[in-house]
Length: 255
Image 1 (tube, rainbow, N blue to C red):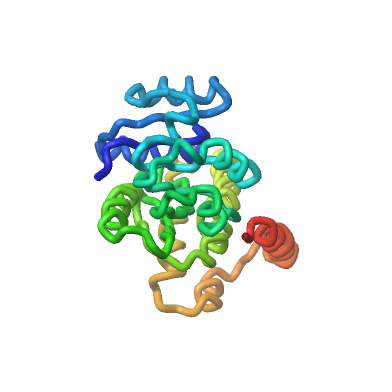
Image 2 (spheres, rainbow, N blue to C red; image 1 turned 90 degrees about the horizontal axis):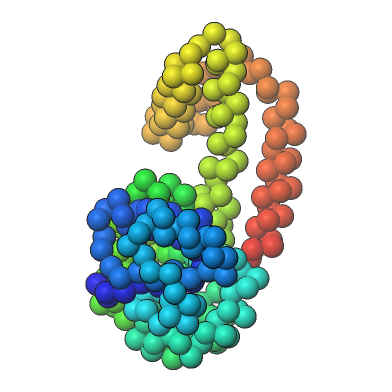
């Protein structure tokens, strides 16, 4: 494996990756940069092994993760393009900006990849689709995949599918996490202790997911197992929210 990693951007995704690597005792020289010094200070306090350096230094590492929002990626690459080594592996973690656009800025770099990481990689249980440039070195690809697989289930896909995975997988937990929290609170309000309510929601969710996807029953058969549906009358409204918000977001993040 290449011996140094740079992170351009020190936000949530960088924290997730650092935690995943740390959990698996993956050791490397790591350099993080961010325009907000408070962000890098917090990261340094959690992961003392990282070095906080300038963007030009982060870009000069062997493997470079572009951990930025899509609107600022192209300008950032323009500013740093001469700092990337031709032998580097550059991995973008953002939707919308495709490999072709990155290559326009980093013509000297052949090993370019895009990864849509999942928050559950924080506990090394991620579902992370990745794609590679057509001329990505095969040996380097195997090395990169070994690294990325420490985060969880990492698999290669066609680039045009990445934005779909961003909507359906990467952002999926945020559609439900707040609902699970409300259910815990309702459990407490109706007489359970906090730990009892948390266990009830946790265990039932795990079992419900397994029932839906491993029972070999049709979805409508699974749904029919519970006759009382207290919020069923609002199902069409919820479906409309999904359609409006998520399909609209998908259109915004498409390359």
